[in-house]
Figure 1: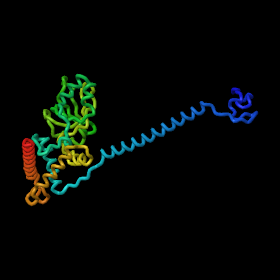
Figure 2: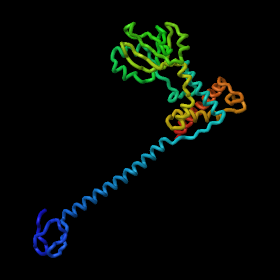
Figure 3: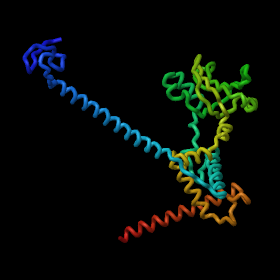
Figure 4: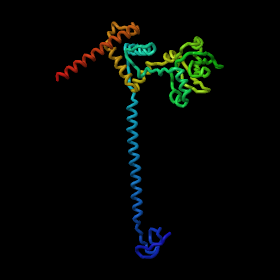
Length: 299
């Protein structure tokens, strides 16, 4: 505690007292007191301003997020539903059998790229770390030649596939139990295609697990639902274009003569009708484009 002189009577008093005990003079606060009050006020105002900005930013972010996740409503008539599902079937058949679909929905009907068990095995033999980066925990469409068929104590079928540089260290594919009947109909030398994931590379062999025959996996996918969900959730431009195409085709079909209504539905005849209307739409677009170009040249 320091002693200072009273500004009024000149006697020594404590620096901590607010009133002189000798003459009753109220001491004035020092300049540092007011500077401190000023700085505290600035800090408080800065904090309040920051909170307000954060609140506004949070509101804007929420609004943007809500805007990007707004779901679209969709109503399809009977004929539109049949056209939609016929197009989905046409797309899947084109994928399996080869050929061009009437309308390509390649954003939503997607299958993994095919890779041979031999290629995977050789990549792991060459560099396990790099191979893990390429393949592990990814859905793979694996092709290969069966060299052995067996099952474990849990009745899960297992296929040894041809591949790699060492005939004693070959790829092994562990199937899901429910596909034991499928495996029982295989023979050595059969070429197979399966959807699998890499489990391990152990003792020089890749271990594929949860393998499903490709045809079974493909048929289990609800491609129609996947496409409709993509449309409703605004996650696929191609889904938007497909729904627009469906509605355009439906508007041009003669409902009294079509095979795309429930009462007379025939998928083969329906896809032929859709193809014919698609050609007419393309021809109309071409004529419109030519007329537009001709008008522009005249101008």
